[in-house]
Image (tube, rainbow over all chains, first blue to last red; front, top):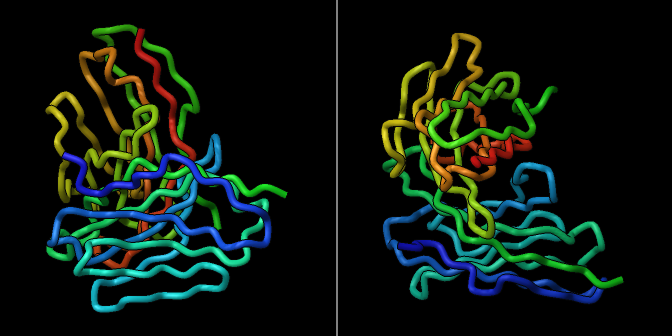
Length: 114
Length: 114
């Protein structure tokens, strides 16, 4: 049962343009969401998070939007840079489980075209 | 500040054997979580240790076991290896077990079971 879904396995975006990565979830108990970036031969690196009490969180070039009614979140990267080429994972967790049990999506491979 | 480190980097075992993977947490972190990432999938939560006690477990059989030591480093042990155990094993550490405590990942150990 895939509770966190990233339906686009890959995405190509021109350098300088906006990259939009999407994530859907099915478990309404999730109340904290995160995005991680992963380069080959490295572990996932934390990018940005959002609590369910917010609908937007921004950090530099990265913005995460949360639509609770649609159980959908998205990560916007503006402007996209070649170093952004990586696999991006969406993750979610429930507050009554504390820190444990991050539930990950299957990832989207983002390629930035120079 | 030293990040999360894991050893070994790569490991090849045969079915039925036992394996121990090691993780050194980031300085100041007392919580370690282990994840299994199969090819083409997102990381799957195995278990978490908080101050040397197991603090939650995912849907993995008892032959997956762990330890956390007083210095907060950790081991993942897998007995009676099966072919499906072939995966990247990721360790993540965090300052605590709260929902906003970000998990920082190591580079992983690639296990191949023949």
